[in-house]
Structures are given as C-alpha cells and as structure tokens.
Length: 227
Image 1: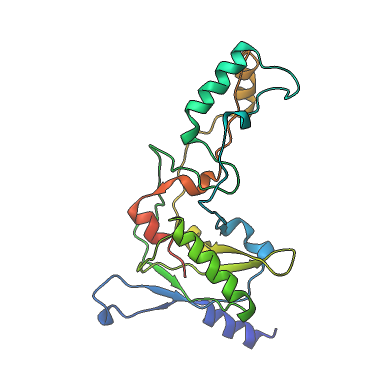
Image 2: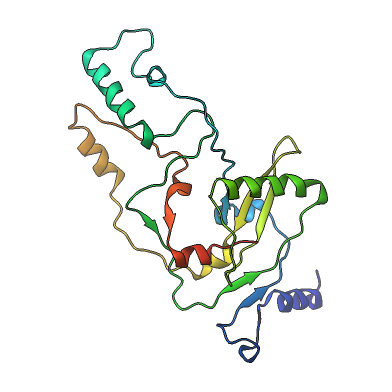
C-alpha cells in the first residue's frame, strides 16, 4: 500500500458526524467497516449462545455425588436431597436456558460519550438463512430483544469448523474504547489457596452461561445494541 492509499484509508476510517442541526437528539457517529481478522479482535467479540428452552426431564437420580459405583452415605443422601429441592435454580439437561441471576445488575459506564452507530457488515447469501434462524431463536428465548437505540455495534458471523454452521458474535471494539474501567480490589489467588488449606470441605460451583443470565440495566442494553 503506497502513502496516498494509506492517507485515503485513514480518512475513510475517521468517524463522520451527523450535523446536530439535522437532528434534535444527541449526535450519532457512524464508522465505516473495514477488513476483519478474528485473531485481532478475539478479546472484543461477544459470542451469542445457541440456546433452546427445550430440555429433557431431570430426576433426582441424575444428581451424581461421589463414585457412582459406591452406595451413597447418609450425608451424601442429604446433599442430594438438598440439591433436588433447589433444582429450579440449576441448569437442566440438554441445552436449556438457565434462570436469570438475582440481585446482580450489569452496567457499562461510557461517561458522556456520544452514541456510536456502525454500519451493517455484509453476510454471504449462503449463511443468511442460518443467521436468521439463530436470531429468531435468541428472540424466542428472550436473550435479545428488538431495539431502536442510537448505539449499534456490528454482528460478526463466524463459520464453524464444519464449514456449514455459523456462530453469531458482536464486535464491541468501539464500545470498549469508550468504557470506563471499574477498579475493584480482586483477591490474590495465593491468599485464597492459603485460606482453602484450612478447610475440611469446600464446594466449587460453575455458573451455566453466566454471562447471559446477568440482567442489564436500561442504559447498558442500549449501548450493547447490535445490527
């Protein structure tokens, strides 16, 4: 690429601002899309899940504790009963949608930044039907909802290894550039391990699809809009 081409591309990459006189609302900045490489933006992509509310029936016998070939002790039986009574809080069998997390709201602080609206990126015709099915499934499971936000991040279609199926992602690079980091004193792993060394029992829990069960506040849902 020669210098004139580089200068031309640099000018094209600059955001263009809508004149405030043409709109009574806050200005919206539009950015032209460019070449996209997954390795360069992996940390900025949010992968949307392929969820279905359909799930197999779960029984108490599906709760496995200890060695399946060894009879359960009285304490293990009580633990299984406790888990069974709380089964409405847990993930079902199959690709079920977990219940929403309680008492937790996710927020994104962009200060007074003007909304960023990026243009839709082209999708190959052979992948459009599968993309449409994915979006319909997300709408049906109420993971996403229609939006009229002035913010818009582009969707990115990732082809799976079989060359046929697709995964749906969202490119949040522009939003990440504006996001104010939340400073929080995270505990040191070494301190946690030292505390754990004093315990006779410990429990490790993994939140199923944790990113997708935390509710967004109204402002964040507008910022994370996509198209």
